[in-house]
Length: 73
Image (cartoon, rainbow, N blue to C red; front, side):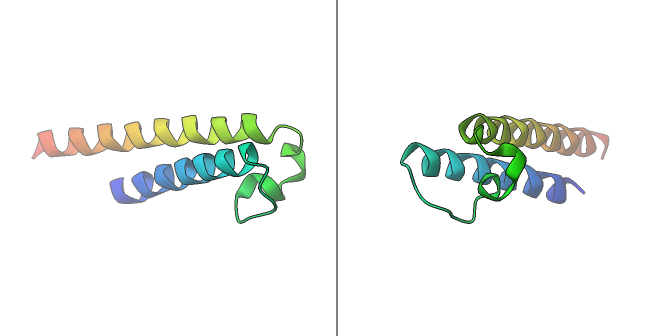
């Protein structure tokens, strides 16, 4: 379970960082999720930062889950 949560956190961070670089360099449409959700249009940079933060929180949560299971063994 920890690996799935950790992978999800990594996915959010990659989407956020890549999208942020794409939007700051005026890149065109790419595979970043923010480009394809109409509700995010006009807030791309803010949403990229939110994706980075959410990915970091998920990553920390998976690290905490992993730490608690190791200490129980």
